[in-house]
Length: 319
Length: 319
Image 1 (cartoon, chains in turn green, yellow):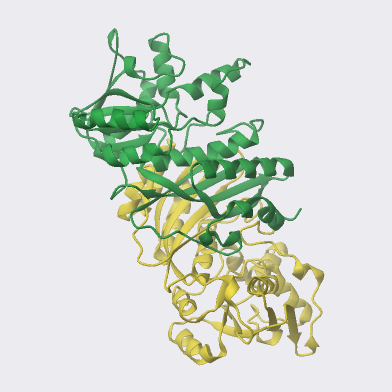
Image 2 (cartoon, each protein chain N blue to C red):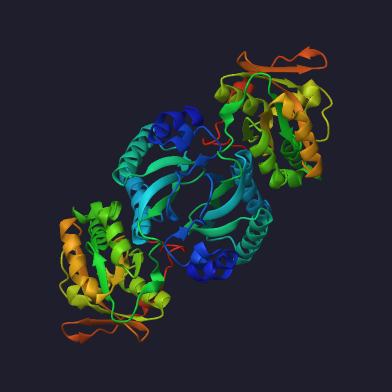
């Protein structure tokens, strides 16, 4: 089947907005926004961010979700998406059909629409990049840099599920966490509004809770204190070593954010009303640095926590 | 050098706009627009769209230009860019420095700024994708679909330079066209305003003049008649076979557009004032189809002209 026909058959049906022009024009038109628009790009490469044998529908879902988590962390609602797809000749067309269907479903779940992109042949493995726009629910995007001393530190969902999935897969064991490794759990859309109303700073947790908390604190010119006993580790954590392992591996895509203590009650109420799982895991302090405590007192963090993969930068080349 | 440091050293200096947040945040903020914003994505893959041995600075320039041509064809000015870079481990850092410098220069030449992206490691060759926004100079984007019978058909610049470069390179001959193959010549920025004011339909010429003219006519529900003698073939064309060859190979990235005959004089005047090379190469007609004439009368077009690579679809996989 000719490549243009692939677009017509599999991707054009996902492009419902008027601005997408049915994916037949040189450019798409962004839907007019009354407030600020944010934009982000995240790429995934076979053998780096997923395995060749991973189910292709979860590759599509992960691609959408790793972008959505960035949009939500800015206090914005996902809006438009542009897909770059580098498709290897030896991947069958049935996989492309499955990929496109999952992409459409997943975008739909986040109320985002495909408006453009580029599909090219890849001489080696599959690679993908998604650009996503978001409409800010506040008057400006929530940034990493707004955390103030005394702010509470919050995280949505659970931390370490992808790590558990990775370990289970490596051991050849069946585990529900493998699904989380393939396509991360994200908080619901309503989290964007909650952050827009209350957060002083936010980011998604992609490179490990501890390293990302350090990044947020650094960007804000403050320090962060985390209480390991309050962190919602996936499946619980049996000991300190496991806490550190789950808290440094990454691929969680949950939202890490700060908010003033006087917003605490309202945050908890709104989170409960909107079904957002949320945990208060620590506090911001004036003194720069990352400080972690467990029930046995201050935790000596391994050197590796200090290694920052960088968000716009390259994710760790794991799996 | 750690990947995050690459971003800091080579790409952050290109991200001057406030919305880019120095490439340190999860999302960038688009500069507020008073009119319509368009967006496009074009990808390039080593071994498909360029050779591993092509100068890395021209790879950067081509990446920017293939996106700029889409923006200009919509009657819009380039604004923001997001880069996805899949960098192979065996490409030296000096090449990355050269790439980033050329990318910055080229974006600057089009008054566009880098605001985000993702840099990942590539297990195989280099791949790149650029997403670019543009601000429409008119009240809406110029589309492929607005051509009317009796409209003039115009093209900017020259057609076939990349083809001549490809042939020269294949023959091992030195040729100025090889530079055009590596990074296409584009009309100046002012072409965006000219199209916004006068064009009824437009697209960039990426898949060959003849096929693209057919696409534009089809999208508009009309036909196109091209006079080969009026086409500005790069280096001139000695005979009909050469005209067909240069007119079907593609990679020109010039602008193909239609405008009413009563705009003809004003168009020529503005083009002359703004240094835009522009040729009137034919006419739109009510009867669907593509009709080409030369000095010896109607031209029988080869089957291959009818093959459309598709713009949002995949470019031809030629070296």
